[in-house]
Image (cartoon, rainbow, N blue to C red):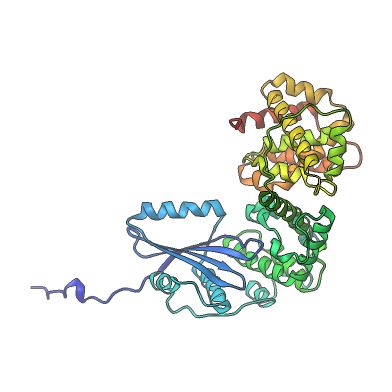
Length: 432
């Protein structure tokens, strides 16, 4: 007869094992979400941890799931933050670094025990130490950051929507009136970026570590971070021009909320008087041409992902001379909505679209292209590469090249009209 086994209660308890880890790219403040999955597959444990550069583990939530479906529902939330699957080793690096920065939030001890990380110790990493983690042998990165890698930062938001959220917080801009003119705000934001360039470098290097582990485009982030540590002016990195623009929009939106100036407006008021729209566009810092506005609106309306009206209107109306002139800003917003309504009517009739493209003169079409590209680059998260067809990517590439071309070239009108109609059909949304 076989020897009787001891009862299950007598068996040693197995140590939890971290089975999966995901992490988002850091935002402009260095905040980053890490998701940990451990425990048995039929009843997983999921820990949601928020890290922030300089503040450590700032928030911890632990869920003991009843089944794998509940865990899957939690993990689907990671899609909204663009989280990447990372190795347990990289997750440990991010968490150990955060533990070295400050006392962890309540709940970390329980989460660590449940995910097999109870013995994880603090391990400070900062500055150039991140470069060593990224390239321990010194073979993957060159001796100097290549210029093309630095220039490529202009395209980061298109590849990674989280980058499009990078802004300089109002609290980082010192001694600036909330109603300051656009130029003063820009100067303050650039000053904040230069003052905090080492912190921005660390944000980029942490992003590089995550992307490297995920098998994505990490080296450009590493080169840009190293350039800042080497003393390069942040203005040399195109990404910071976008950070400045996004920061101004964020500040204006916050200010208008405080002051009771709510957008969107209703599109009311009389049509534009001769020259009125051009003057308002000039004062707002855009091209003083209705064709530019029409291109901007087309990119907003035809984007794969909706752009909230309060966002694109705020970006449009706040410029150097309109910052303090609320009536003029509202007037421009109303005129823009009137033209937006006209665009929606045009898109409902294919022949109207073809006729509009066909009858716009070359100079006007080039201006329209510049407005379209300006909006698509301002809101790259609304034009995510993963959701674009090959035809979309080819047309966007063509329009972008034409927007930067001084030779007077124009797109093929028939191809452009056909593409606009395709986009209108695939992105038709209810009017709200």
